[in-house]
Image 1 (cartoon, rainbow, N blue to C red):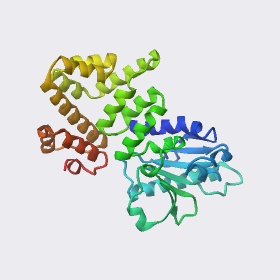
Image 2: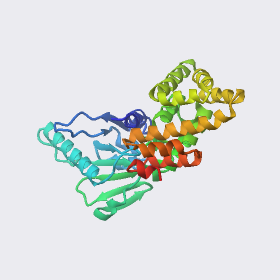
Image 3: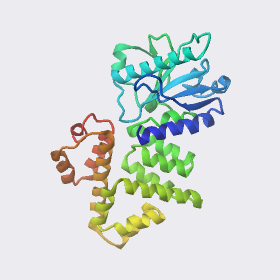
Image 4: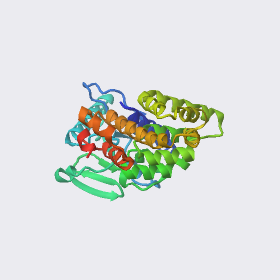
Length: 329
């Protein structure tokens, strides 16, 4: 399970109870007794009446005690294979619930899939009913099967657990909206794990990167050091461009302030080259995390590119591209 998946699940675990006023709570899923069949988690319905006034899809959970949740983050596959696997995990959990009780439970386990968007292929094989912005009933189905398209959901506080699945421009919009509504520590984690555009990351770093709370600031410094430790090639290239001092001060006092001081002291060419270097490193990081291999020719293509706009476009395309070749068009 990747860091982005962990972040999404942690957000559900922390936010579900808060935004529903204790009406629902997240529970990590134990491994089902089948080979490689494990769901992302369950949503326990603790107070159905507390879900009624909330934005969709929350009220749809009122008639259930438990929902099986499948979280598909940006870059995850949402093809027919993945949907079939989700249905298999739902069926396995339903069998478990039947076996857990005597007399056997006679219900149907609901399935909610949360993803950035509704895949177009689903229209050809299922009946889809849009009952609220971003919320679809998938039929025909003997059980409640909902698809929540995070990119279409409204920006509402109680929908934050679903909104973390957004992608592309919709993710940038969500990040700018949610940052002032959450603690600095949560915002820093969002900046670390969520694949938003580089310019949105820079904007949020400038606005929310520092805290007057010494404890939060100490944790922030630890996160920043971890980011550099995870990408040693970025640090090395920045050193080669002559702005190591700016990065070191950024770790101690805030990356943006440190880089600005480094630029003020000195290397105009370093500024341009540092931006290009950082963009190339960010592009490679996205491709590596997506598991998209780079050929020698593509590596050379990235190294030759000296246009920031092109590099930023490639980064955005790399979030959803099926291959490295498709990302670098």
